[in-house]
Image (cartoon, rainbow, N blue to C red):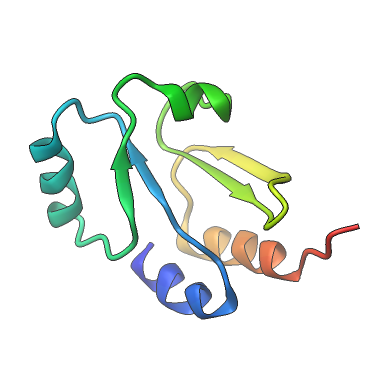
Length: 95
């Protein structure tokens, strides 16, 4: 994920991690354990999960700048698959 963030952030892709950790300390520990360099927040009451129809984790939601959901994947991405999905997001042209 760090490599994808490094490669695609300059192309305008914004990465945001949402966790279900119940405490701020748990969330901070998760970020530290995985050396995450992009913004992360908590969703202990599952408001964000409900809004994006996320039923389990990990789930990745690819969202265009206008807010259109381009794709959703329920499972961890293999690196090549993630890079290809992000490239499709960068290449997507809004109608």
